Length: 342
Image (cartoon, rainbow, N blue to C red):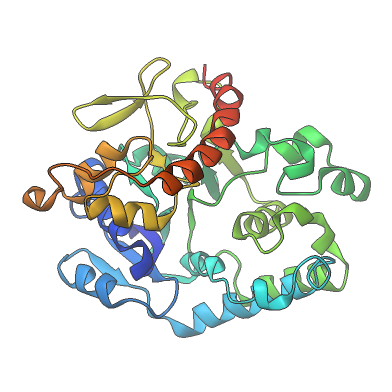
């Protein structure tokens, strides 16, 4: 059985892609096959990086990419807020749904990492869970308040026999997950599209997450009713860890991060809510208010440490003000996630 890793990238996130690939080589496997899905056509630096690595390829099935692009466009066009709260020009050019081509790729089982992450441990437990489950996740999305949850919980409760607890257990993120090739084939996707548009199940997707790949994947995994596993719902406390750089506390042991509570191994650290511009500037020697930036720089320059900036130049006052506003939002997340990691 061919197993591999997918990620989604273009030249905008080049520095993050390099750091991710290096962290996978260091902490997961040095020879596991990796496929980079093109976010768009800005791929000059990405292609050069791929050419330098024997185990990395570029996803080039244009028919699969177009199939998912068309599906997402048609679905979101039918959403009640598509032409009310935002204009179509603001959302129709997004390509996050391209990550779903992983279901059409060559890996029979796969793990997907967003490019804004660093891998921290092997994924043997992901492969093990995929023997029993069709989707495997490791995140805390199911704990979000109802108004901002991926799925419209009250509506689904009133439309089906599912209760809130049943629905919540199936809610998840789309930044790190495992699954299998062949799910959501063209016929199944056509049937799901009919339910979304013709049977108005598009309203099962919370309007808060309009045009969000996370929310769309939640509908797909929920509606297909295949078995789902989430490590954060495990009865084993060792499986319940944080993963967010801007919210969760970690401990560095030889450049590998562990959950601060219990020093539990984590699958990955996710640099969500940080701009790719900040990482690009960081790699150019400009300081940035990014938590665990030293760890990022370690993996970004893991193969060429001599190029790592020796010191970081200070930010300007305008940048500092902007970062403080972001930090206020981040701090509200910390207590929310910590209490569920015990």
